[in-house]
Length: 210
Image (cartoon, rainbow, N blue to C red; front, side):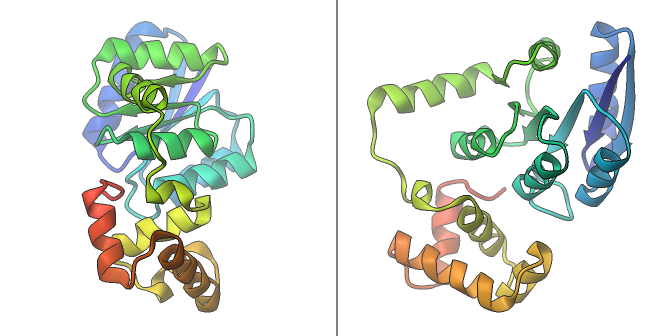
């Protein structure tokens, strides 16, 4: 039996995933959750072959959720879904331990191919995204500013750019306000920006937030 946990805030999308995968994997069982908190609880309580995780869950950043899942079960394959095909988020997700990254406009056969590859122990990204990532490497382009940031700094940047205050980021990440303020100062220093308004504009222009 293949056990798959689907974490997504939209019931229709979850149902579509289950119907698609049931057609290709006959012995499959699903569980559905809507939030990061519920997903992590299920990961702690039960064994899963794969977790399918929406990067835009309503309660927490998807990369943060990925970090927590990998901390609880390092070997558990996680397939991240995004509504946008940004290679910068895909690159960060793969660096953080995701086994796959897909966008929500994929064809059904690509979903089943991705899950099959992950069940075999491989990693998978969508065809169009793989082409863009390969192009980045082949062109040898200079790293964008966000690539200078650590994983935690990148996470804080995205949360600030989404409109959260330093205090709200501190609560969400379980950190002190002073620590988050230090991360913010490092982000400003590394990017050469002066304030949150510039950070927000940069994140929006580079599609770092959805």
